Amino acid sequence: PVVMMADYAHDHGAEFTGFGTDGRFFGRLAESPVPFVSFWVAYGAANLLTVDNALVLDAPRRLAVVATCLLQGIDAGVLIQSALYRGDLRGKQRWSLPFVGLFAALAVQVGLGANGRLLALSLPGAALVIAGQVTVFGDRIRGDYFMQHGGKKNNPNPIVYSYGEPLFMTGWILLSLAMAYPSRARAK
Image (cartoon, rainbow, N blue to C red; front, side):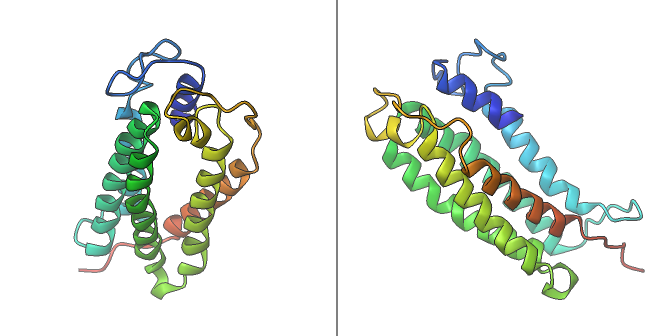
């Protein structure tokens, strides 16, 4: 819902304020990067909980997942989104490289659970999220076309029900299944 609100607001004319959009559709907070970054951090923090409700803070791989999610939230929710709102294609391309790298790192970090067997879910999951995002950016009203025209011209042929959405969601489901694989707290 967070991405939907921000994308809808931008695609339908909400003005970029330097930190999200002007809030005319869902309010300034909902159209700012704050919910986006917060949900990324919550997603990463979820891997600190075990199936028996223990909080694991002494596992470097799990802490790396949280840090990667925080960085991904900032990269995607602040840097890439701001470049998009400004119509800055170069900026979007520059920050998309770390986006892909952070997603690959997240897939490996999550996939190393269960002795690496979860890589079979996490790597294709990350690849599908990225493929879906690329497709959706091309299909949006104010996506790639908008940026290719310096933020002055909306896509004349947007695709609302883009096939990028099922790719994106399938990727998230696979990545989330890998992260949710049951684990127990280590015996002391």
